[in-house]
Length: 454
Image 1: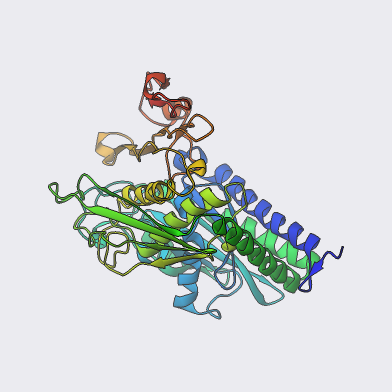
Image 2: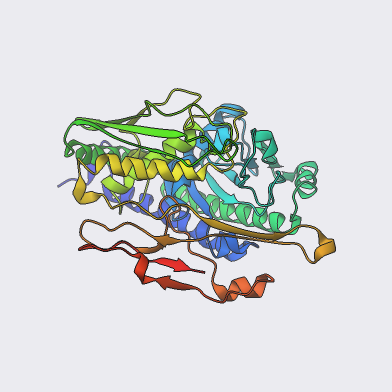
C-alpha cells in the first residue's frame, strides 16, 4: 500500500504534525519555567499555539480551553491589520483588544512570525492573563464596567520589537500604566521566550524537511482532520437541538436577567450553530465578542466529537455560525466584556446540553461554574503591593460511564489551583484548609465531581 496521498508522504506528514504539537508543548514548558506570576507558572492561565501564515491553527498546547479557537483568529486579525507583507524577521507583536482576540483585555497575546529562507511560514503565539492591564480594577475582571475603555490598555498588533529593534517607547508606556510592572514585564518576557522557542522548532522542521513539505504536510493534516470530523458529525441524527439559560444579572443592571439561547443544527456532515432569542449586548461587562463565542462553541464540539485528538484547524471547518452582530454573544466595540467568562462558560455548557438529547452517551451533566478569588494590595503605603489571582476549581458533572472529575471547571481546561505552599510563600496569606467536600458530589450511578473548601 502506498504511503503517498495527493503528493504528500503520509508518514512524513504525521511526523511533522506531531513535531509541531511537541513544539507547542515546549512553548508551554518555557512559559511555565520563566513566568514571574504564579497565575502562569502554577495555574497556567494561558494558551499557546502555532498558526500558519494564513491564520490556520496547526498545533496547540494544553491551557485555557476557551483560548483554543481564539489563537488562530488573533493572528488572522493581525494579518488583516498589517497584511501578509507587514511582518519582518525579528518582529514581536502584541494584541489584546477583545474584539480582535476574543476574550477580555487582560488576556494579552504575544506572537512572533517564523521565517525560513526569507519566506513567512507560520507564527508562534502565547496568550496569557497579565497581573494587571491598567483598568478600573487591579488584575482585570471588572465587575461593573460599562464600556471597554474602562477595562484597561488595548493593543492592536503593535510591534514590541520591530525587525529585532525594541520599541522602547511602547515598553516604557506599558511599565508606567500597570500596577505591577515587574510582574507584567517578567511575564511578557516569558511569553516572548515561549514564542521564540516555537519559532526555533518551526525553522528546524523547515531545515530538515523543507518549508514547502512542512506546509503541504499540515495542509494534508488539516484536510484529514476535517474529513474525520465530518464522519463523526454524520453519525449524529439530523435535527435542531436547543438549550438556553438566564444569567443572574449583567453586573450593572442588577434587576436584569440576560438570556442566552443556542440552537445546534446537524445536517449531514456539517453543524450550524445559531443564537436566536439571545438578548442584545448587555450594559455590564458580561458580553463576549464573536471570536470568543466561536471559540467556546468550537471547544465544546471538539470535546464531544474527538476529545483526544491534538487540535488543528480541521476540527473547526465543518462548523458554521449564524451570529448576527450586537448580541451578548457577538458584542461590538465599545461594549464592555471584561467579565466575559460567565457567558463563555455558559456557551460550552449549552452546546453540550443541547446535544445531550442527540448523543447522550457523550455528554456529561452540568459543571461547576466559574469562580475565582482576587486578593491584592496596590498602595505601597499599606505595605508591599501584591496581587493573587486564583480561579477556584470544583466538581464537574457526572459522565455517562464514569464519575465526574474534581478540581476542574468547564471552559478553563488544564488550569490547576495555586498550591498552598506557593500561596503562603509568595503572599501575606495563610491557607488554613484546602480539601475536598465529598458530600457535594451528588447521588447517582455515576456521581458528580467533589467540591472543595479553601
